[in-house]
Amino acid sequence: MIFDKSFKEIFSAQIFAIIGGTLAGIILAAYTDKIFIIPGMLIILPGFMAMRGNISGTFASRISSGLFLGVIKPDEKKSKIIRGNINGSFVLALMVSIALGLVAFLFNYLIAGVIVFKIIFVPILAGILSNFILNPLTLFATIYIFKRGDDPNNIIGPIITTTGDLTSIASLLLVVMLIT
Amino acid sequence: MNINNNLKKYLTKIRELKREKHHALLHEVHKKHHISKKTLFYIKEYGGKSNVAQTIIRESAKILLLSSILSSFGGLALEGVQTLFLSIFPLVILLPALNDMIGSYGAIVSSRFSTMLYDGEAKTGFWKNKALKKLFSQIMILTFIGAILSSALALGITHFFSPHFSISIAIRVFLIVIIDLFLLTNILFVIAIYAGRYFYKKQEDPNNFLIPITTSVADFTNMAILSILILILF
Image (cartoon, rainbow over all chains, first blue to last red; front, top):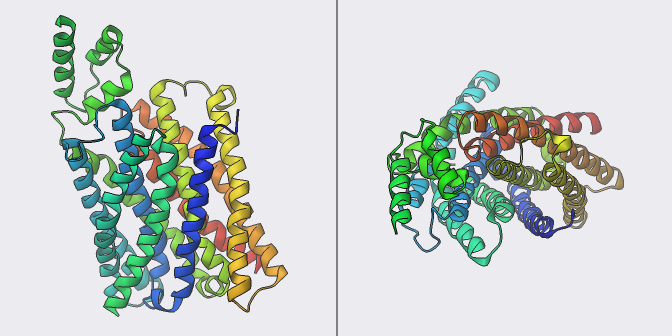
């Protein structure tokens, strides 16, 4: 049966993804002149959005597996596994943000022949900012969905990518506006 | 009571195993106490001897760095057609939504396929695997619905808020979305199946690898396909 509970779960999540993505797109379209004022922002944008989705997605996926297996208890939010996941995700986001900044700087220099140091700091600051919002949100959303009796694997992915995009674009916009 | 004590002793032993080591004890406990191999693998992976954060960073750092750099290459392709791309208002609105849809399909396919691997449901090939075929059909139907909904939303917003709207632009944007999404979902499945099996065989948690791989390849390909289609159709 194709149109089962799992299809309905993915479909509802997809609607969420489309609406959230379109909202992020409207912000992007409305602030094009501000976001893209620093050369190389289009190089950073996909990588930055992917990073947020990847880190929070795998974070949620590990927590889901742990919850289903009974290794993580929904009411023990300060357990060793959860703390390790939060710390690990934070360090990973910082590492990838630094790499993204350096790659954009290099592309700018090698292809466009311009030296823009600001492009290194934009993803780092935006990465730290979005981390503080997304990590707790991912944890609580995964546990909440699990407690409700739904499968977080079907629902959390779209929620994370959507909130990740909104947070990413808003953080990048905020940092660009602060730096320039 | 005795059985419980025995089990506790076994689980403590498993937690103390070096995480790189594939130990016969896992199989023994699975047989004797009927605890799934998935649970035992998780206990070993994030158990007493392992530093959870360090394990996650060690397993994910390389792939995340690689995937983000790969996505940046995709961004580079879009940077090449920046002026043209930024002038097509509905496509700018659609960019995060397309990324979201592809990202969430990637996450769903990856995590569901990882679970299938752990449960032993993914042993047969694609054409013989009912669960996988069902997932593929579901994602294909959802891709079609998603393409229609997202383009309708972006085109509707453009129609009301931007003067640069015409039926010709609407058709071209819809064509870009549908071609892009269908190509990418197929690519996602191929990657998830091959990479998932590869990492599972290597005794690593496929959850840590599949999502970054599928989403980054999807991001890169998404940008590349978008840039090519923009150049062809506009």
